[in-house]
Length: 444
Ligand code: RBV
Image (cartoon, rainbow, N blue to C red):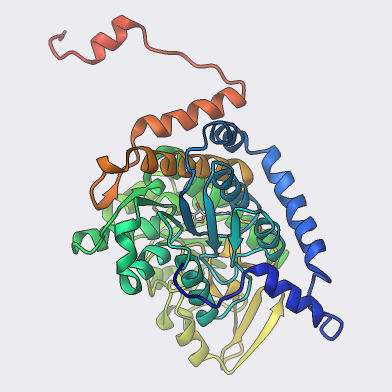
């Protein structure tokens, strides 16, 4: 192991507990009760994760990860914890930390850290320095496989620990932003080991990005504000898979959905779906809620804040907190205060209040009451992650450095496990049909 002094969550919580009689804000009086609560959350999640249960049974029997070290940076909460345990029970030593300073559940992190093959460094509310110290602590385990959500682990290894790359078989990336960063890195010739683009599989994107982001973002905003969607003008920035999900679910909650886009075919698609499409400069004047899903920076900026109505809600569902220009908003504000848990009101000179939810960070995970995507969709995404790690370790030689699509048969395997668990039967091609689909010499 390379050097890292950053302590695992158990040490951090034990120290916090010692001080808890002085600080009533510390939620867990002792490490043991934190672990029990974390385990309770995981027990609930696992009841609704038949795919990981299936994969776990296979891994326990086959021990495909014996002797491997898996480094992970993901949202450390109950569902992710089931993935982490599944990999550990397949024989790996796993070191894990968060991929967002606000998405960790400390109790779950503590429960994971109790496992003999797992070290968890994830802690909620860390500053930038501690966030990166924890990433380094994971890297200090010298992983042979990395699993990222957002690519911070891959980036830190390439920038600061390139000597470890020879020992890394490969990696897997969970999210759109991470895959985007990886592809940019690959195009620059700077990515030195193979990484699977888990995000881009049908089993991830068509469910997690669409339904997961749609449901959990809207639920988090509703619970954080106690406000209704019905009759609101909801501005969805970006009509990618996440934006489509948010738009569809908001529409289902009786909101009037406005979409902003920069890509002509997506703008047209949104228009043909029946949403209003307009530039953000116009949407700013009429929106009640603004939800960014673009993955790009500076989507809602000063000129937009100046036009917004009193009381608007601003939230981001993209991976990083760069979509809403909070520095500019802060500069415009004459006052700032916490209007509710997870809601920061910025008061303008003319008295208008613009309310930012979860500090402009990934709202479905970073608001105080957020729980991330629903369990069922994460079961699918993490099922794909699990078989990708297996594939990388079984057939790593077949993958050159760079970004790789997940082999379709792995994605199909996960779909079949899920359909069987749901007791959904479906058809298969006859031989004649298969021949027909594979031939070109038939016409009218
Ligand atoms: N995501 N994870 C959760 N563990 O509760 N919820 C969402 C969870 C993932 C999702 O797959 C998405 O691609 C990514 O978070 C964005 O960081």
